[in-house]
Length: 182
Image (cartoon, rainbow, N blue to C red; front, side, top):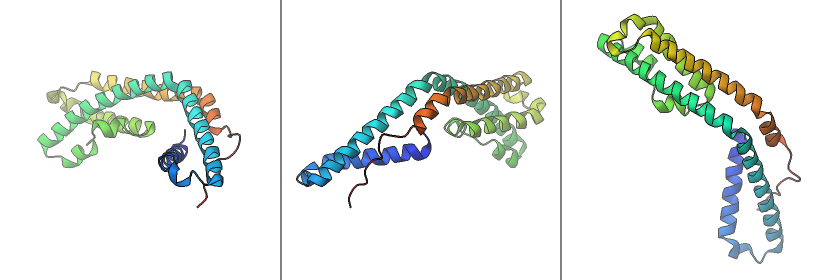
C-alpha cells in the first residue's frame, strides 16, 4: 500500500471502531446502520487486499530487510569509527557528517538508507588510512560497499516482484465506501 492508502486504512479502522463502540447510540437509526454496514464491508475488503499484498511480497521484504539491517549495522560501525577519529582530531564537521543512529540508517525509506550508508562509505574512503586506530580497514569498506550493492539489488527484486502487489493496490473496489452522514 502507498502511504496515503495506509493512512486512509487507519482512518477507516478508527472510524469503524468508534462506531462499533457506540452502536447503542445509532442502532435505532436505520439509515445510519445501513450505511455503516456498507462501510464495514468495504473496510473488510480493504483489509483483505492489504493481506493479499503482504503475502505476495513477504519473502522479498524479509530478505530485503535483512540486507538493509546488515548494511545499516556495518555503516554504523564505520560511522562510529569516523566520529571517534573526528572527535580525537577536533574535526566537528566530519563527525557531524556521519552522525547516524541505527534508527536513522534502518528505519527510513530504502533510498535514504542506501544514500546514508554510501555517505558513510565515501567519507571513510577519504580517510581510511587514518581509521586503523579505530579498527576500520579497507576490507571493512569493501564489505560495506558489497552490502550496499546487495541491498540495492534486493530493492530492485522487490520492485520486480511488486507487479502483482501493485495490481492489488490499484485494483478498484466493487464500490466506493459510502460517506458517513454528518
